[in-house]
Amino acid sequence: MPVITIGMVGIGQLGLPIATNLLAAGFRVVGYRRRDREAFIRQGGIALESPAAVAAQSNFILTCLPSEVAHMEIMEGPDGLLQSIGPQHTLIEIGTYHKAFKQRMAQRIEQRGARVLEAEVSGTPSMVSLRKASLFLGGDPDLVEHCKPVLDAIADIQFHIGGFGCAVAMKLIANYLVTIHTLAAAEALNLGVKAGFSAQQVVEVIRQSAGGSTMFSARAPIMADRHFLPAPGPFATLEKYIDMASELSEELGSAAPLFNAAKPYFLRAIEEGIGEEDISAVIKLIEADSQADSQAPSKKEKTTC
Image 1 (cartoon, one colour):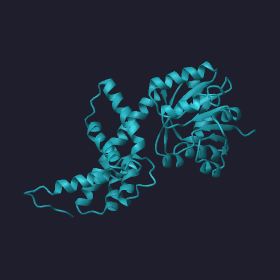
Image 2 (cartoon, one colour):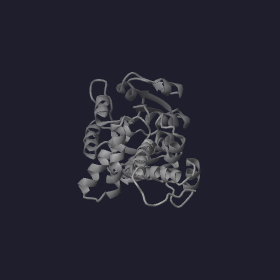
Image 3 (spheres, helix red, strand yellow):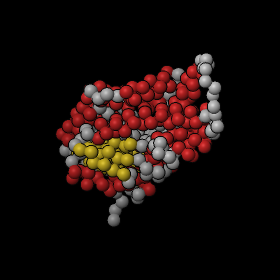
Image 4 (spheres, one colour):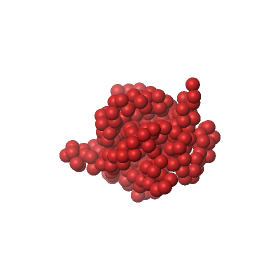
């Protein structure tokens, strides 16, 4: 049976573990990135010089770019994907963009005769590597089935959300909760330390309790160890999702008291110069605010374990 070649345009922080999973599943993977291709090559990938070159060697093409501007750069121009794709191609769009932008791009892709599936990733790059991330899929059911061998190589957990453009809303809801739960984890860990427990003990107990959460399990150990770099999920990356989730809740008139309380902490982290650190570093802000609060006079005697 011939080896299937998968193309990837965008092999950065998220794209690289996706490519690694594809390689581990036995696919031949060719990819394009303007710089820093060495890690991809070390994993067994074949680096090419343009998006057009990727299209020439593959029928399935995954695009994983961080912004709408970056996405347009790889789609447009003589060496872009739009000039290189045809009926033989299926694109799997992994990047998170506004629904209207996605749908406009899908129309242009389909005008070339190609098909496109939306595949939003819920999870950090390390979760992708461990196959613990989820895929939220948007597109026709038959297209989902057509792409299944590729999708199965990326992640075990998959949900077909609906038509193309629907998956991004679910991704924003997931990141909406990431924002709230990460701040809640920081508050809880800080409270536990102030109560006299070690950070490690709080992590060990709470992650296995009724109050545990996926984000507590993922982020509280980082908070306890103070290893905020390299960042599996930096503040600078989450900022886009916070903005888009805010827009979604406002557009739909959905009350957001917890999200609106959490959001300023993550934006403040960027303002204070720690935007490249993992979002678990939000505990620094909680600790700073706690120190400020502790200077206020109190009539109650503090009790710790």
